[in-house]
Image (cartoon, rainbow, N blue to C red; front, side, top):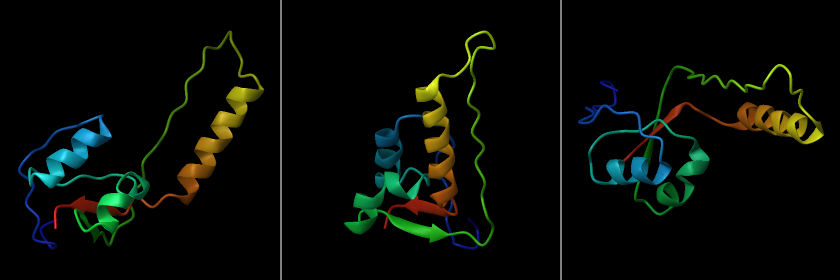
Length: 97
């Protein structure tokens, strides 16, 4: 972030995507998000993307109760999560323009 001359003002973990976008739009920091979460804002020029040289990996854990095995719908969900995470790029930061 120093190379990009970005100095975050807020350090927080925010679960609500709209709250994340709102904080960034107000200039309260930067956010690591999926590109698909900010396509409209980036396309409309309200946010900009800063590339990172390094790859960033995000792990996902799916938990199920050991006595309640996954049914076909659960297995399909796990497959969709795997496919989605293989396709996504996590190597960018959204910031206010």
